Image (cartoon, rainbow, N blue to C red; front, side, top):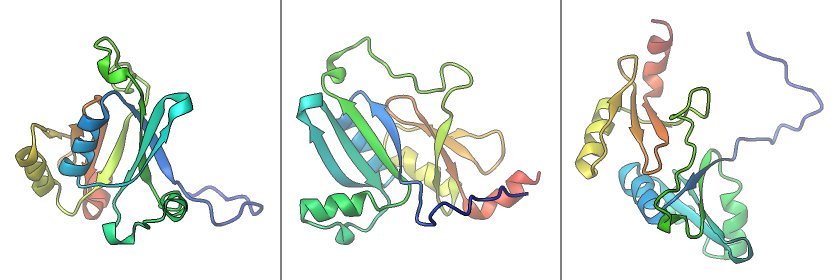
Length: 166
């Protein structure tokens, strides 16, 4: 059963981003770009508030506008991007860690990345770095952790119906 949408809402709404706080942007950017294959769409510094955000997604590099104003509008028109937010100085604080939702129950769970073949993707992740994939509770799912301890579910869209109905 599906829920009824309000007739008063416009139809051009979309889920644009999920934001994760990161301690060390160099490590996080390496993980999300080199290991998971995302593209850095835009980096924006906020000097007065002492933070930077990095917008990442699965887009064609050739489509990213060179003009900053156009790039900003384009970046915020992409669907399901990942925003990594770095508060300046956190990389130097050995005691700092963010609540990633996985150390305490009932918090944030994970983000999901769809791949054609879960097993091939996990093999590639392990070959490209010190990332170990953890098998999910159901066959055909896996999880990897980013440098801040956030879990990323690795799933294959073509496999999901059989996983959900077993």
